[in-house]
Image 1 (tube, rainbow, N blue to C red):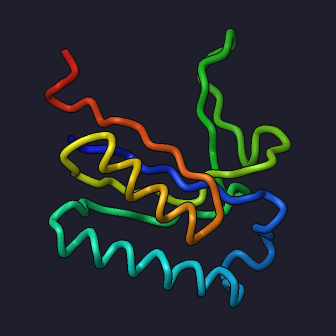
Image 2 (cartoon, rainbow, N blue to C red):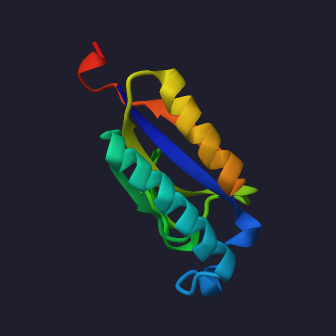
Length: 122
């Protein structure tokens, strides 16, 4: 079963002006994450992962009464923002919870697990 793992970070800790220059804290967290990724590669459970750009460079496209409109940047004041995602392919939701619980314990930031429906969606 494939799962999408969404990683969130406090909006206040992610400064758009310094988004291209990671802090020592961010680099340490990334090193910890790389250890999990290596473990999942070794077990064959890793599919992919990517970090995301700062919310200030985000575009939202939505349908309105006057047509489709694209707007820049953050859409509302947020306490947490989506920072990265990963796809894992594991035997069960319990295994996904175990992996993600360990990541949250080490990294300290919330993560969300969502099943990827793929061929199971019918």
